[in-house]
Image (cartoon, rainbow, N blue to C red; front, side, top):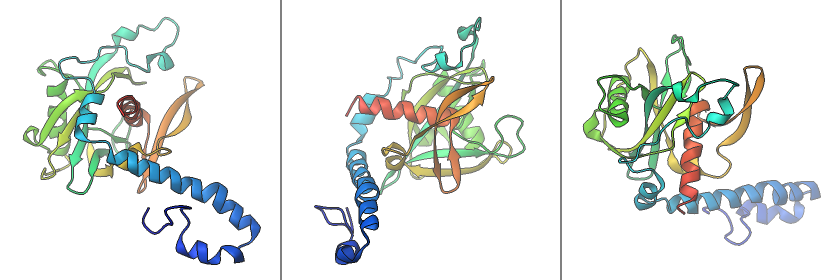
Length: 250
């Protein structure tokens, strides 16, 4: 890692002042700081191995869209609930091919919306009657919400379907987005479009386990933060699903 000793992962300043440090500070560096640096180094090596071929192998082919009820449906079920009655929806999981690093593109919903105001999400929504399939729905919603045209997007696979607390079964469409795309948030549903490095999203420790109260009981979630944005709920769950599928195709 840049700036650290290859063997011990200490910085030059830490090595020079090691003997002068208090025993408690040396112990903190050994038990907290250095393991974290080692973890980040492993994450960087893992991210470097996430090439296009591996990513394509990790997702479901477009010819085999996932069906309901969603890989997480058991977490949301209540006695007597019909899990096959969820409304079909689709989102785009956009991976922007930047020259220096691949980036995951997110939207931040406007604060005045009735449902999920201000939350971070992927572009998407309900599959309408006029949509040919989930891919067409995801591309349409992406254009409507972000202004990114279908010509700049290359869908290449699906993640596993996801059940949501709002009654949807979501099909996540994974796609490459050309770095030259032009994003223009619609301002009605989307306040902002931003990107997070894929390597950061997939790094060990980024997606943190948590819980929220739902229908009077705790429900497990995953979440992470980036530059003041909290990414959680269905969006983070989809990224967790991507990470698990990539692990199986290491």
